[in-house]
Image (cartoon, rainbow, N blue to C red; front, top):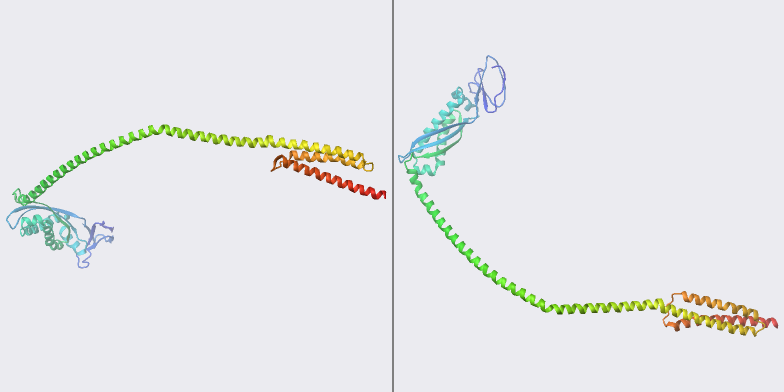
Length: 366
């Protein structure tokens, strides 16, 4: 084989022909490749994968009872260099078949030996103990040939229909059956009690339902009777409330209408009457002043002028009063007092002017 060689992850590459290496007749390469000189070196491969061997052995216990024991061994070539060398020197030519046969023989011998030192009861009850002892006894021999055991499992133990194992199981089976019967009886009793309790509760529920229905019907009848009795009274109370509300509404409407009449009719009429009265008073005062002016030769022109202006002043005041939005606390009397005051003030002014003019005229005459 020529060139660079790399083993698979589950293989060991053996390179021979170069002389001993580390107390080994050949070089062992795992997990990486190496160059191999052609013609002077030879490359071989040894599998490091898992193998399986199944055994079925007839064994005799200390009670001279024959038992057929079936077991499975899982094994492989160990990963250290010495184990690989030992396995390669023994199984390289036909690795799988030769390793399986030899492993089966090793375990079969130890299995017979250990079963012969135990009773059937121990084997049945402590099967794992039997497997551990066989595995421990085989470990040294398997290591010598470069193999390691991952597991050893006992699959079955049979007494070839002798009935011994069945007899061993009989008390347990009887106890199981007895417990099952007791449990079944207890379950039946519990079911019967539960059924009785269910019937009792159903009867109690029916009785309570009947009582509740009767009470419910009584309440309905009582409510209906009270409703029949309270119907006319409630209607009368409602009618009285309606009449009271209507009377209150009528009162409020009357008050509102009275306020409207005061604002729209009474107050304008009073204002107009007062205006007419003021005009009449002013006209009478004008006539009187004209008469007085006619009797006075010296103040005819002046008096005539004042007399002519006085009605216009009073008229303007009365027109302003008619259009004014005044609040008079004492009715027509208050309005009259207001207007008389204004006319009186006008006359006072008029008299003052007359006196002043008379004084001037007297000083002029002197």
